Length: 96
Image 1 (cartoon, rainbow, N blue to C red):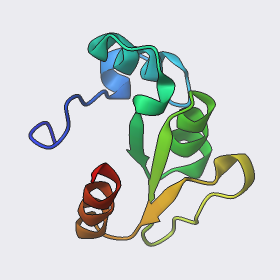
Image 2 (tube, rainbow, N blue to C red):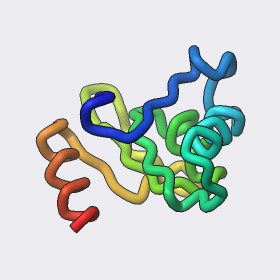
Image 3 (spheres, one colour):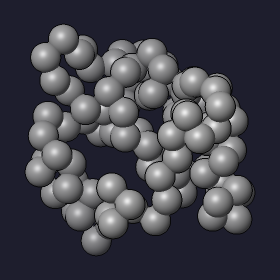
């Protein structure tokens, strides 16, 4: 992933799990930015990944696979995808 994205932050690196906001604060610090809408977060858990990222103002992408339901309400992602090819195409389209 490091070849595709400018930065990758994991909860192991931060020392706390999502949806703790310190995960998203580290992204801002790595880039030296304050605008939260510059963060695009990919995850599969609506309750932790999507919720935490949306609370930080990030653009959210939810990976849907067997046993994972699309988030709803405050846990609803901005975008969802079922394959990483689909994610690649979605990001390419959004970045154009």
